Image (cartoon, rainbow, N blue to C red; front, side, top):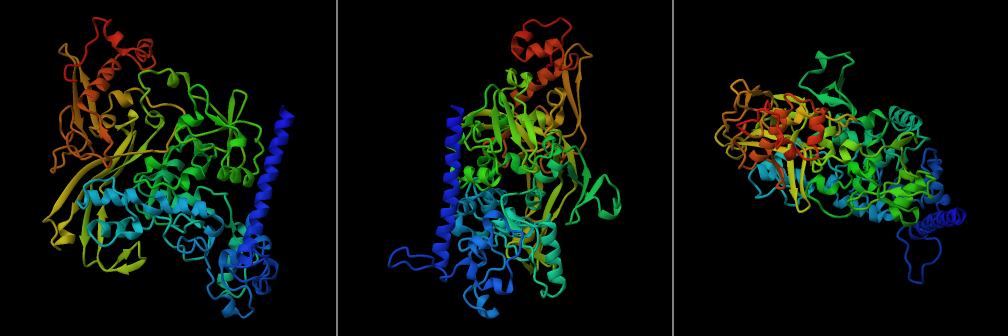
Length: 633
């Protein structure tokens, strides 16, 4: 059976290779006019073969190309357009695209061979930024809900849209890459090449020499366009906002200046001059795993559907790899075309083994496989084989935490930003429109009081699938001086918002957070930093909270809080950036603190607390007389 299956798979590989060769032939016919597709067929480009393109008369075919983008197979004009039929420089360069792959030219360049991928990208959140626009317009009072659909490139110049143009609108795939060179931490946009452009050392040196010689010394090594992404491709955009990239690598943003930490190895100064301090990195990053080891092309490029918020588009779950009982798999024979191409480009060989899939939408995780009872992941950075461990017994059998997300317990820290004030300076001569890429007069200025780190707070996601507890951070504890924009008079129309947001910290650790860090933590419960104590001196239990931060005059809650301590403060107001996400209710806070009272005497690993995981109510019915339960929860 195994030999028969292997033969079947070899045939399948042969078919894929044949399709690839046929695709090359189709490209040749479609773009270069080889052969006849019927008496009325009209080629889209001039009728030449790649080997006879006049491009190579001046630009001798350099090296550096990926196997499937070699100009010997597809020529130069299939990517760069232009006229490959003439020798005159000016005429041959007419209509040429120097940087193909930007979404402005992708239909004529990358999309000619990859129409499905382009269609997905154009609908993806990385292109539309729909959620960012929706939430901003909602907070400014320009929309009734944060769930409307938008496209960042279609916004105009209202107060919120100007706010986006000044502070947010450069991180989207439609932003043009206009300069030659590799993807850097400052890179934004670039369409297809935002992810698929790679410069080797020789290509980098050649480009530098080309620029230094006033473009006289033509490069001989071309950058590669391929699927071999690294975390640098993600960093430029994802080191902002929720700061997933910096979190993943173990860096926390500060308000320090570069001169204050110069030459200090515990700090990092980014290219945009923001200063970060060293924190614990995500366990996956510490084990040389890339972002795309988990978030494959199916998620990154999207599925062609339009979403408002990122959690709707991300279908991967920790339990897809770290499964509870048995993983969900798919045979190689059933892989979709996109997965087959990745499998082929990566030169994987596990076509005789089951491949893990995402439980939510079934997309294959092609760099994983199951061998016997053991699952493995092939690292895309270095090909290293990682053993995948299933959920620990404490996770898989824990009835009390079955609706708690993995990230809630396994995240070591997350960012918290407080004291944000936004004011418009109509006379600022240094304004810059991030969307139109031009200098302007007047801009929104954002003032931040403090960057904090702590365990994430507990939030509740309620959908048709049920209720789950997820990490939350203060997304917007802020004031907006709308009067400064709309009337030109500062301080006359100020709105205040205390909004937390769901968060995927990407600071995963193997060890879980201590039980007390949830059950007797004011930060976890949404009260903010401070001292939460359980008093039993009078023979009855009473929780008391002393906040670290002063109360904000706008709503009377501590500056960093989400909700008031054991009261209705902010409970019934709009307090999140999502309509399906909320803080703990009073009753939920009471239940959490009831366990917290027990933890004052019993450690989380004690026998009695371990037994409580199966049935806490039965434990309460057999209390020791010395146990004092809280009165105020």
